[in-house]
Image (cartoon, rainbow, N blue to C red; front, side, top):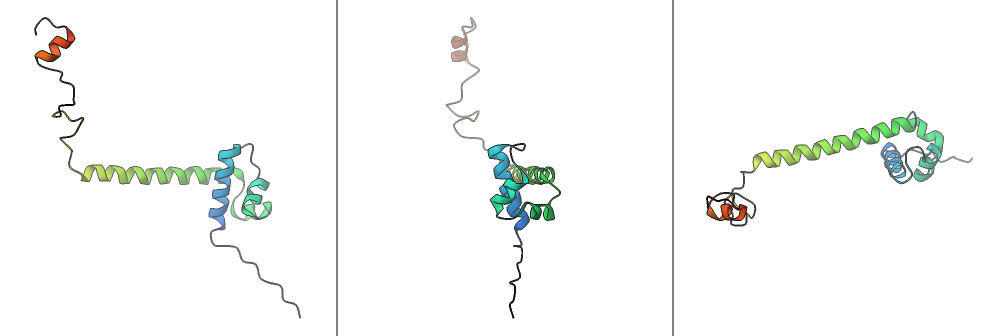
Length: 117
């Protein structure tokens, strides 16, 4: 009695396909990448791609939307951090720093050639 091993798909197959497609799209462009190229990169058949996605267009849409979502998360974290921190009033480029150019007073007037200095 011979038993055929049962093949199971990895749980992250969809993510693997997206990652492979993103890399190939970046390297070869959307038009220069085929479903067969993506399948070969993942180590599956082109038909297996269609179990997860309707085609290259859906793959590109998922990649772009996923990237935009990650960018949004980074912006949210960065802006939340900025709002949580008190504003910095001193430092090399603050208005009170000696490194900041003086825009008022006699020395500035002389620099500008003003007759009021």
